[in-house]
Length: 258
Ligand code: CO8
Image (cartoon, rainbow, N blue to C red; front, side):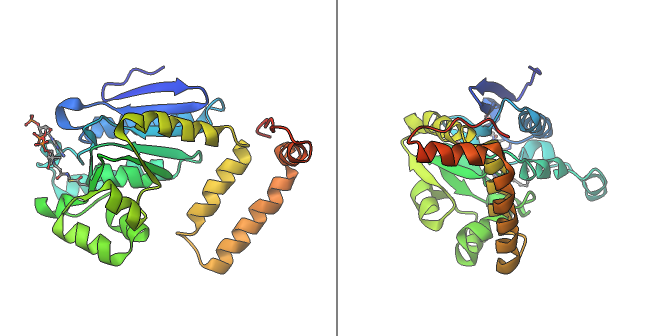
C-alpha cells in the first residue's frame, strides 16, 4: 500500500479504513492531508475488493478544521487560480458508501468532511461546529450548504453565525448525525455498519447512495423517476435473483456483485 504521512490506511475485510493522523494539530486538515485522504479514498472506491469506507479521527478530534497556520498567509489570486480545496469535492463523488466515525471535535472543515460522508456515527463526545466566522471567513467545502440541508436554516444560521459548538445529542436531534454510540465503541460500530453495507449487492448499494443523493439535486417528480429507473435496472442483476430466491428459500443471500 502507498505510504502516507498524515493518515493511516487499512483494509478490514471489505471495508477501507482511513484514520486521520495529525495528533499534534488535532487532525487539522492541511493540503498534504487533503491530497492523501482523496488519494486513499478514490483508491478504495476503485478497488473491487472494497464495498464501503470508514473515515475516522482520534478520540480527541475527528478534525479541528482546516489548518489555520498553513492557510493564514494565503492570497486571493493564488487560491483562486490553484482551485484550493477543489480536490475535496472528489470525496462527494465517491460511488461507494462512506461512514464517518466522529469523536471529539469536528469543526470547520472537520464538520464539512463528516458531512461529505453518507452515514455519520457520532461518539457521545462529538462536538460539531462551523467556527470559521470567528476567524473572519466562512466555510469553504460545503459547510453552509450541507449543514443547512441537514439541520435546516434556523440551526445552520445559529451555528454558522455564532461559531458555537453543538454536542452529539443536539446534532442527532437536529438530523446531522445518524446515531450516537459510547466513545469506546465508536470504531467497532462504524466498521460493523460499513461491513453490513459492504455485504449487500454492490450494484444495489451504489445505486441506493446515488438515489438518496439525487434528492439534493432535483425535484420530487424527477427524483422519483430517477429512483424508478434504477429500481427497474436492478432486475437485470444476478444479485436481484439471488436476493429474492434466498428470501423465498429462507436462507441468507450470497451476492456476487453482478
Ligand atoms: N489549525 C491548525 N492547528 C490547530 C487547529 C487548526 N484548525 N486546531 C488545533 N490546532 C493545534 C493548536 O494550535 C495546538 O497546537 P500547539 O500545541 O502547537 O499550540 C494543538 O492543535 C492543540 O490545540 P489546542 O491547544 O488549541 O487544544 P484545546 O483542547 O485547547 O482546544 C479547540 C481545542 C477548541 C478545537 C481549538 O484547538 C480550536 O479552536 N481550534 C480551531 C478550530 C477552528 O477554528 N476550526 C475552523 C478552522 S477554519 C476552517 O476549517 C475553514 C474551512 C474551509 C474549508 C476546509 C477545508 C479542509
